[in-house]
Length: 130
Image (cartoon, rainbow, N blue to C red; front, side, top):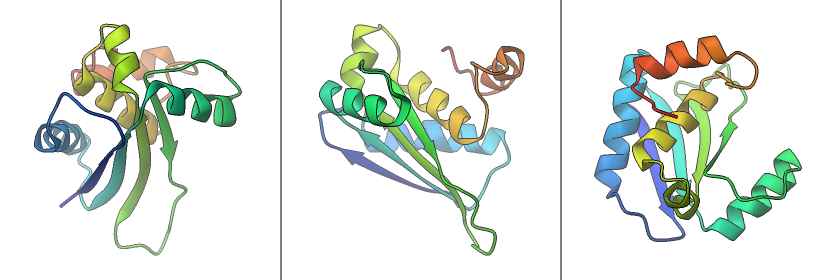
């Protein structure tokens, strides 16, 4: 069973049950079980600060992913954290489930900036439209 923790520092349109369902469904598609991840919803200013600090890009973005480094002796697979600004998601006219899936693909090591073809292949598997 996967453990998905959700932290909301700002209001979110979806309830936590739906967010967990989306994430679990994607994890099941990749045959990932017994994993831990967190999804953190923040406001536009906080995600801009995180983007500046970690990517040196001083603009707000919809999603950032922070993969966990491998913990070889752990009985649970630590995936990492997804940080989402739903404010930016709405401004970009995106869907929150797609943004969750997008962040998850990054946690799993897929990167659309490095290999667009592989990204699209994996995104199609989980019906991620970003």
